[in-house]
Amino acid sequence: MQTQLREYVADREQLAAALAHDLRTPLTRIRLRLELLRKSQLRQSLMHDLNDIEAISRSVIDFATYEIVDEEQEKIDFWSLVDSIADNYPQVSFDKASLVSRGMICIGRPIALRRCVTNLVENAVTYGTKAHVSLAQSGSDILLTIRDEGPGIPQAKLDEVFQPFRRVETSRNRQTGGFGLGLTIARNIARRCGGDITLENDVKGGLRAELRIPRLT
Image (cartoon, rainbow, N blue to C red; front, side, top):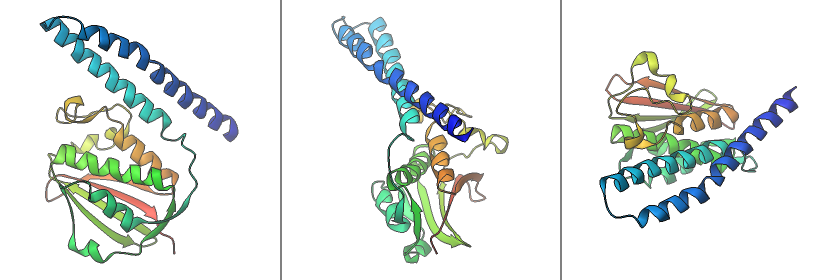
């Protein structure tokens, strides 16, 4: 039964990826033909719709293929991984206590885990302007906390943002960041390596995301 379920999921992922990939050719043709039209309100509207379709297509490919990459698990210096991701975002700051939290080792797929953390960071800086990052040991786990300075999410809807293509408030929409897949992918990756992600509205304001993954002892 487990084998059949895995094959079913893999087939669905491959089908979604193939369909989204095949959309690229006709979309490219449409874009080229639109470029030949005179500038007008209709042309602008059609280009806007086309941009939306292309963004949706990219999102479907992203969501459908993130599990397909063949990647072996290995030991990962989690502090170094988070630090290298944070270096790409001037809006990210480390809590001082985290600067001495080196030597945190976990087992996982490095590309997938990097994607998981990157999605959390991007979510924070996109919707919350800045991201305050801290790392700590919590029992047998590594605890990564990312707090932003945004408006937060209504308490009753905190779990809904993990559902694919779900945006629970007007500040979290296509214009401000994607199609609601980043947190879905991040949580799936975390759970596949024995961890999880939770969201809470922080008492200091903003949204707090916590990623827990097992620490190699």
